[in-house]
Length: 300
Image 1 (cartoon, helix red, strand yellow):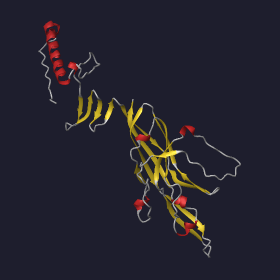
Image 2 (tube, rainbow, N blue to C red; image 1 turned 180 degrees about the horizontal axis):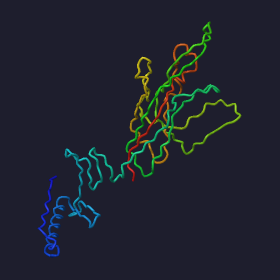
Image 3 (cartoon, helix red, strand yellow; image 1 turned 90 degrees about the horizontal axis):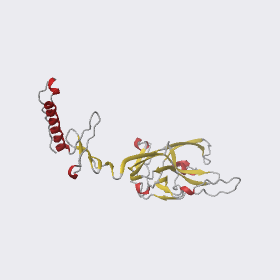
């Protein structure tokens, strides 16, 4: 694109000449010539009278106007044309699909994810992390990813080992962390109701909500943080994992998302040492997590 300079040559006019019709006509001719140069450079460029102004690009001879915003190196950073507004990386800010928009949902504070042991009935149930995501009807999702932050649970148990003849109390410390975390989408949101039974001897295992796995969201084997090692500080830090794109499973309206272990029951492993005889499998396979969902799309 060529660069054009504009040179407005006005005749020498005294204050007395301002009353002269010929002088005024000369000024109008120069202004008209300048406008024609601007039209040639920018297309159909019109400035409204007084302080307000309107700029029109294109339209003449059915041509399409284009506005380019460049950086100091001459690279086009923003392009405005009949298709809309486009960034240099190809992202459309505004176009036929609508206005580029983003939403972020978070699960809130740290929450346990793994298992819960219910001593009253002897059952172990999965402990999920759930959050609701509402997609507007006029919003088209283009990309959606979950960032999962995982922190260890450090637990200390004081106990007496019956096999120890001294009867001396012991102290054990172990780490708990989630295993095989996968993403699910609940399918029965509109039919949900809480069920409570009083004065019952029932020891039935609580039913989990109907849900479908979002296959491969965190890989085929789900997400498992690094095995904690007291001698390796890096394995004791908060770990982060990002899912693949899950935009295909998000629908307009309420989306009930569930993060939980893909294992129905805890793995057959204890904390090691004397604690193997204790009910600690659930604790060793439970971590603490925060989930953040970032959604990008177009709002019409």
